[in-house]
Structures are given as structure tokens and as C-alpha cells.
Length: 249
Image: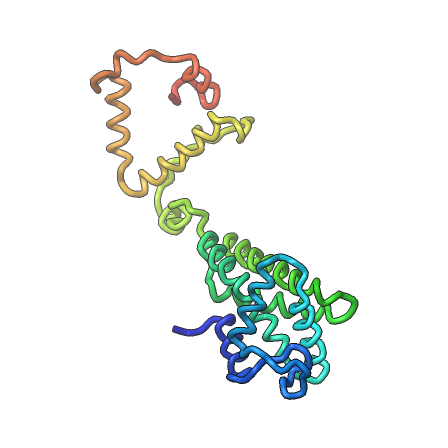
């Protein structure tokens, strides 16, 4: 299975940090006055837990500050560590967006990663380190939803006829001139009902079912179907007839 961008970041950070201790104070644990340092797996667990607590964290401020110092030296190690430690807060959201909007998970996560790095660059000056992680997460999620909205606009709306547009063009439409609605409010329930009926009728004709449906309705009108004689016309039924005339219903 091909790793997505989050997986690539994690692999890169593990490779850079290795199995040795991680120091967020001076980067090189051998030069730090604090003698006990965790390995990267433990360090990441602490960072994720501190972030999940939703409280101001000295650890995260130090991570961002270390990242800015590393950037100045041309090293992106700590920048990638920050992204990797934010990944748990993005993975689940990216999966939900991908599932709900039917868009590629890899594309969603790539957009998230790019947006997070853009915020990192934009906040290099004038933004306190404690605010940077939150801004990165928000930008990443917004980018994911932009991807979802673009995909939604380019995909099927869920109606079967949208998938059969080329077939429909080659067939005679059941939408006759007499069934076009004029001077009607599209929000009116009766109008909505007629539009839905026309679309369903077009599909029935496309699949060769129009004759069966027509015979069924002829039996209803002629009273040949059991129980139909006992049905009374209601006020609600009569109220609909203004849409296209009394013969429509």
C-alpha cells in the first residue's frame, strides 16, 4: 500500500530522529543541562497528549520555537516534527471528509499538509508560537473542505439521470411542451411533486417501463383495479390541479 503524505512525514521524522533521545531545548541532547530525554516515540506521545488537553502547553511553544530556529539554519527537522505531532488531529477528520464527500483520501491529506505548511511560513514573524499549531490545524481542515466542495461540484449529484445523460439525449423525452410549468413557485410542494414526477417518468421511458406504467394508470382511471372505486377525491387533491390543469391528476 502506498503511504499518504502523513505516512511519508512520519517516516521522514523517524529517520531523522533515529532511536536516540529528542531534545526540544537545544536540539542536541548531549549539550542540554537536562540529562534525561525521551526517544521520539515517547516524545510524540507527550506532545499529542498535551495538545489533546486543549490547554496552553510549554512543550508546544518550545517545539514551534525550535522549528523556527531550525528553519533559520536551513533544517526542516522540527517543522516536520510539529506536523507529525499534529497528524493525529487531522487523520480522523480527513477520513470523515473523504467518506462523506466521496473524495480521494490521499488528495485530502495532501491539501491538509500543504495548507499547514503555508501557515507555518506565514506565521514565521509576528505570531506567538503558542498560536501556530491551532492555526495550522484550522487551515488544514479548511483546505480539506475546499477539496471536498470542488469534488462535489465535479461529481454526480446522486440522481440516476445524471449518470445517463448521454443515453437520454439519444431517446425521445417524455417532457412535453404541455408539461412545462409556467408562473409557478418552485418552492411550492405541488410544483416540486410535478418536477419529481417528470424526472421519474423520463427514467421509466428510458428503461422501457412507460407502457407498464401507463397501463397501470389507465386501470386506475377506469376503475379496473380493486378498491379504487371507494377512494374519494380530497380537498388536497383538488388543490393540486392548478399546477397543470384538472386532467394532470
